[in-house]
Image 1 (cartoon, each protein chain N blue to C red):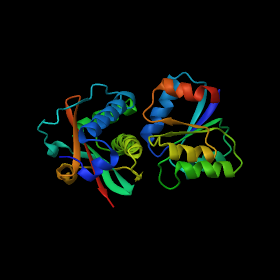
Image 2 (cartoon, chains in turn red, blue):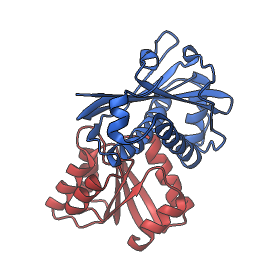
Image 3 (cartoon, rainbow over the protein chains, first blue to last red):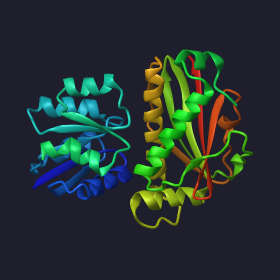
Image 4 (cartoon, rainbow over the protein chains, first blue to last red):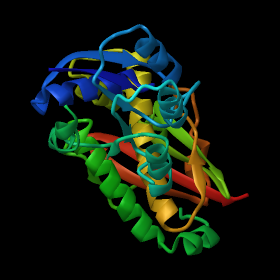
Length: 121
Length: 167
């Protein structure tokens, strides 16, 4: 079983993603939440065991692209999947070049989560 | 009301095509994320009273083109949307409602941005803003360059407005 960190400024979306991970039947144990990139870095720095990070891109304070860069800059190799409405190839490509493992477009189905995340968990 | 003709030419989409794209995006969001699959577009000829819309969620576009995408609905529908998204009853205008409507606006804006980007427009998105209250006026919907698409969602009116102007 894996622990997952969800980084999204919308508490509603964090709740929907958490629910969808369970509905998809993915092997998820604890789910941690962060409201922006800075909060996400704080969760990672707290020493919690996390096997997968799901991050929004368009967030205040520290956006998803900066979050990915900082996590990788810190030497953390945990897979990061961008969950975003902005499925534009340029932004996704930039995230991947900075170390993201892939992307999921919002809105999504639990089946799409399973398809994209199954191999990472 | 229609998009500015120069904008329509720039994105290679007619108002009807863009309205159809917005309809598809709204239906997908409401089916997959809001769990309200009954949302359906109203005819463009429908008489819509925007004054019943006590809740507005919006995002700004910036870049080569500036603009605004906004959604407007009555408080009762916003409460229903919030309840469906959270999976529990929401009976008052509170932070949960602001967050849920903001996220619907965010998904709408992000997906419309993808359509505009495919059409060649360079645009960036702002963070969503949600306002509410019976006294607020929705001026953007009366802008002659605003494309307005109306929906019926569980008996409530949902209006989507899109305005773009060249910098």
